[in-house]
Amino acid sequence: MNDSLFVLDSKPVSYVIGEGALAFSEKNLAQYKQAVILVDENVEKHCLPVFREKLPLFNYKGVISIQSGEQKKNLEQTVHIWNELTRMQVDRDSLLVVLGGGVVSDIGGFAAATFKRGIKSINFPTTLLGMVDAAIGGKTGIDFSNFKNQVGLFANPCSVIVDPVFLSTLEDKHWQSGFAEVLKYGLIMDRELWRMLKGKHYREIDEWSKIIIKAARDKIDIVRHDAHEKGIRKNLNFGHTLGHAIESYFLKSGKPVTHGQAIAAGMICEAWISSKVYEFECIQLEEIIEMIDLNFDRFNLDESVIPDLLDLMRQDKKVREGKLRFSLLRKLGKAVHDIEVDMKLVREGLQFYIAREKCS
Ligand code: GLY
Image (cartoon, rainbow, N blue to C red; front, side, top):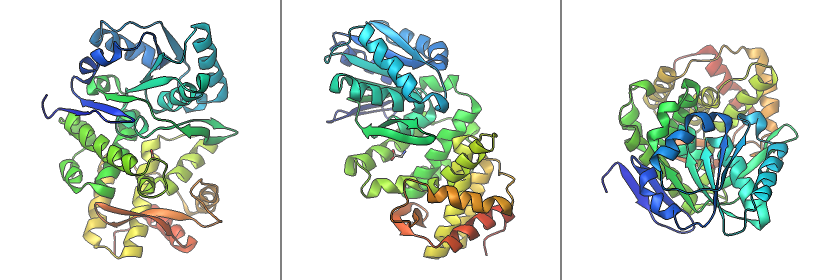
């Protein structure tokens, strides 16, 4: 083993992360009598051939393919998976291999956890977002009635196998969505990771395996301490309260933006709010904004959208008893959660983003 492969043989989830992770996991897969692979149509085309090539001895019963995209993370596609599992006579000792990005691991984990009261699954994320975030931590579910992740459960796969080999198939927008989350780990808990990234555009980075191991380990640490998001896991929401509102706003207006772009904008606003609540040094705020601006284009928003964004935020799952709570930065590398923030300050955070002012 070398420092480009991280192995954590733990319960309830074991992890293999880094270069060669696929080949490393071949023996582990052999213990299942029967396995079925779940993919979406893009993964089937671009990643399934790589998976087959790297695991030539892996014997599986069939492939279930679903339509790709967040809009397809719905009940209809879940029923399709359940139907296929039934048709293939999958039993409770079988394994569902979930090969794909965040949408596939959300819906696949949900279908596996509910089929026959639960069959085993292993996540093989194929996108950067999946590798450092969605495949880790057992959040599964589908969108319902226009709300994201409205129906679902916490249900862990038995393993998460992260092999960066799939990144060569990734489109730019998917790099961005994953990179926003990688930056977030640096900001909320990992200054060393931040230092590794600082001043770089994601396209210039050549040590992805190391970065993925670091970011994924950050997420593993958090979910091992707080599987059900009662405390420290909420720190992962930094940038997401405003970010989700921005994402929903553009989705509703028929001009969808990537998750990464929206979270990047959310992180700028929430870093600014943090700097006001915790009065951290201006230079740190400038450093955060510079790094985000280097990697993400800013949106052209104007003040007229602020009321819509504030309304969308009030519908967020994080609102309790009508109060908006944020995960904020106490300083660069240290987040805190459940911080009630006055609507006036939230509005000012958005105004700061729109005006592109320098910190003062
Ligand atoms: N993506 C945030 C979490 O897993 O809690």
